[in-house]
Image 1 (cartoon, rainbow, N blue to C red):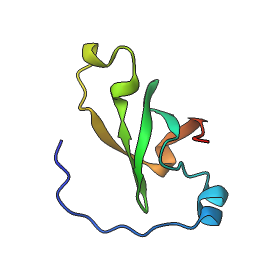
Image 2 (image 1 turned 180 degrees about the horizontal axis):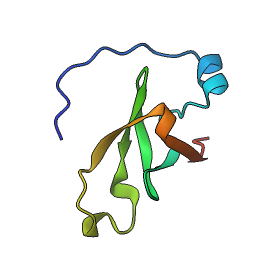
Image 3 (image 1 turned 60 degrees about the horizontal axis):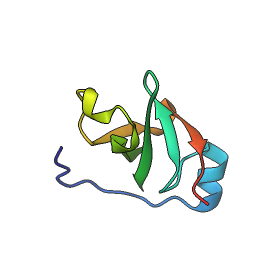
Length: 79
């Protein structure tokens, strides 16, 4: 997957807390049970590394994917 160029607005910690937006390092779950570690937080989405899943090689997915904030659940927060 190639990420060319896009604009981002960094959110304050208060904005992320109010909206339950993941932070870099958090583990999220999305779609039908896919999980990944958040690499970057954008205004409307996060970039997620799904290679942390044990069955990653069996799945037909790219190593990085973009997930809208509305479409995931935080399952583990980075300390």
